[in-house]
Amino acid sequence: MWAPEAGWFSAEQLRKDLGGRTVRGGAFFAASRTVRGLIDVLATLVLARLLTPADYGLVGLAAAVTGFVTLFKDLGLSTATIQREDLRHAEVSKLFWINVGLGLLLSAITAASAPLLGAFFEEPRLVPIVFALSIGFAFGGASVQHAALLERNLLQGRLAWVEFGSVAGSSLAAVGSAWAGMGPWALVIQSVGLAGLRMVLLWGACGWRPSPPWVRASVSEHLAMGGHLTGFSIVNYLARNLDDVLVGRFVGTEALGLYQQAYRLLMIPLRQLNTPIGSVAKPALSRLVGEPERYRRAYLRILDKILLLTMPLGAFLLVHAGSVLSVVLGEQWRPAENVFRWLGLLMFSQPIGNSTGWLFISQGRTGTMLRWGVVGSGLAIVSFVVGLPWGAEGVALAYASSGVGLRLPLLLWWVGRTGPVRARDILRAVLPHVIGGLLGLLLVWRAELALPDTPVVLRLLVGLTVATVTQVSVVASTRSGREALADWASFRRAFGGTAS
Figure 1 (spheres, rainbow, N blue to C red):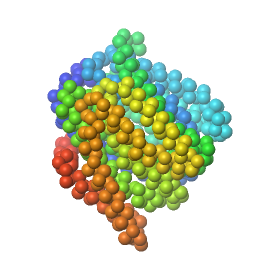
Figure 2 (figure 1 turned 90 degrees about the vertical axis):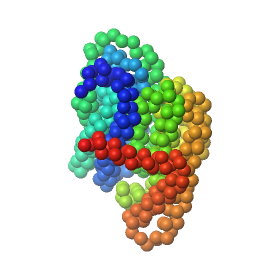
Figure 3 (figure 1 turned 60 degrees about the vertical axis):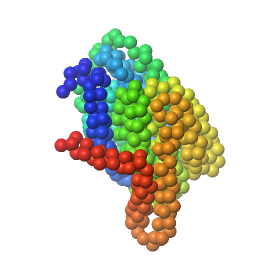
Figure 4 (figure 1 turned 135 degrees about the horizontal axis):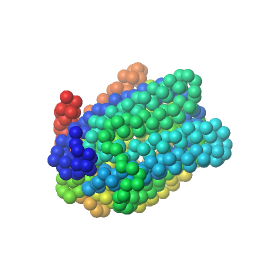
């Protein structure tokens, strides 16, 4: 057990075994996230059969708005805690009380706005739902700094158990509520239960306790970084959620339920990758900023591993969108096939775009990140408006295609203007994966045409296998690709050592 001051706040201890901590932490957390993902998929599968698209659409209307308020519960202060080289107990205590006060304030504001939301959407059932969802902000504010300290110290094993326990508990509560006929309230219970369980488990996993609220400490630099990150989160939220508001308001709640559930299913594999990898990439890269060559190599090797998984999955989903929806969610969700297919294009761009956030944050370039957020979100909003006349499918196609063809190239230029990693470095690393993904798409499509009368599950297994083998074969022809493949052996050995 580390001493509180030296253990939780000293960056020197992390440098002694930074590589080992990074690999072990990532290995354990990735394995746990896989289990969590299975629970999430299972809960989604069950709830999709117990609830209706209208139930999802109703809660989706509330979540599209209350989710915006969620952006302020953190104020970016968790990332400031992770990124800062030098940190003291008094500073984190001050940040903790700021987050707690803000969480309570946001809970009160959200509850007070419930009648206005019900009137705007002309849906009185929204009012009690928003009241209930507001409780989650208080829970979230009280757990921000505990999660940040665990992540800063690369204690991903503890974080993994927290995430696993909170998701398992809230999912069981949601399924039980849906089984009891509570309709959309099952989703509300899942959301609030997740926040409450996570708070309790984080306090148990992190031994740090704050000083009283009147502790004196200067946190102006933390607040400046947090302000930039909060600004980015706000504009990014508009890019990720204004489509929900537009579809719900102008197309209808049933169309919104189909659209949201397709997007949510697509995000499950991306979250299972981005969350564990990001949880180790941000603190690890933050400690390597002073060593440009090590920093560049570390980032590109992480990116190689991500794309090795996401590119074949994108090729697979573009061909098998309808079958995946039917098997996972049931035939009642088949109308979302084209929405799911077009959003599947994001598999080719979003993992790369997400990784650039680690570069901005670890290099302390949060002001530049905010300016990109304004530009990128503006382009996304334009795509929503362009696609809206064609309904949910048009919004999905316009958003995803503009992400691949416009927003991602511009983002790579933006992040690569300064710093150890340039746009050409990223493009050189990405090219073999793009070739493998496109070739995999063609071969998966040909395999699907060749197996018209084969059972759907077998066709899905064949398609995923073809896409994966094609990707690995193409990537293995490059030196960086072979290094990425070799890293998986180290990854497995590290996990075995951690688990023992």
